[in-house]
Image (cartoon, rainbow, N blue to C red; front, top):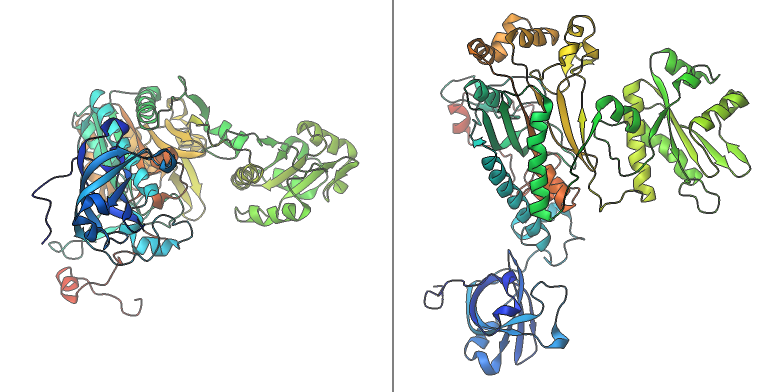
Length: 601
């Protein structure tokens, strides 16, 4: 039986010990992170979620409990009573928050023993990620992950405080809802009570929060769990968390953006002690794409795109001319100084490898011109006149040591290829100042884009985003040119959050559905309850959602979303700790009227 020293409770967290507490008696509890035995002295680094405290067992002072201390091994769970004292000058550890003090133990209880861990918790950098995820309960004990989850918890606390003070109510919305296919794949949940019918887990609370606005709840927010059955990547998981908000009686994007800015400022100030700019920049979608090739531009460095379609359209190089003739464009990046003869950042082999890099973004190739001390080096200039080459170099503000990279294709391919290339080049050259918080709003997104796969227009954000009032006539004549009242907050080249003013007039909402290729029956089947609600008075409203996991990544500096989620999934959406998904009992399937296709399995 475990004895808690006559019922004594913990009176101090390990990481909270300070020199002001010297001379006082405390009871601490935690895991043995490390044990060092020097005969009559045993040192144990005791770890809890707040940090590490060195505990000393002295055979001359600990008495009968010293024998117990000899049995301690890594990850044993301990309860220790003792007196806090100052460390001697030569044993001070400046790397520890508690490095100037230690606890001289007088009593010890071993609450739980432990097997030898499959990896050392003090250095997991060389441990295979799959192993760490299999033993996630051990991985979560590491100070690195502990601090990240502490930050995430603090973000949620600051969010709730700020939203409450701003007059928002926290309202929960259902997990079990209706599938409304328009976007990523839904996770489906079979119904036992309604055989052959399914619920869908929410990709976001979008429809519910708009219904709440129609219901008269002016200001809603929720820290909402969301689910999307899509392929994973470094900053995406099948289940994730949004800071979701919606406001009524707003027509101007600034109304929502102002509240969102206030929240982000509070989070940065109170969680990491950083002040954001008093005025956050605005940039239209068109400017972001033209300058950076991305709707989430990282503006901490240059390498901006330059359009030379007017020159390229008559340059003599058929690849360039055909791209312009077919409605595309030719754009370039000047990698300034990347080819300096005395210290080149890119070798010829590096330049050739960049062609394969941009091909992953559907580019057919990557042309280039290197400006050398003795002239220019390129395979494309032989197709151009000397005047044309000079015009291109002038447009690029090219100097000796520069390398110009060109992409010629449809605009979306040019943007994607050069947008990725500028990030790749910046990382290679170390141009990104990671200490800077680069934050801006991107506005005026396209409302619609044409899907070649589906042969119809699809919503860039979702079908409930309001078009710009002045662009409404274009829904009938040129849907692709319609701008939306949508806005994204971009931090360090990552979309931290996004939202829009919603459609609040039923005629416009129905027209939007029609432009997306839905007839009356499809509208009724998919969104009948939502469209019907519009018949009973809909206030103008808008909202936004921040990715809580993405925000935590930005504030903690990790580039792996698995670091900010306690129990994440891997690339194939499985959980290596619980081994989910897994087969279930045949009885469970029969109750749900489901039969598994054995051939597919």
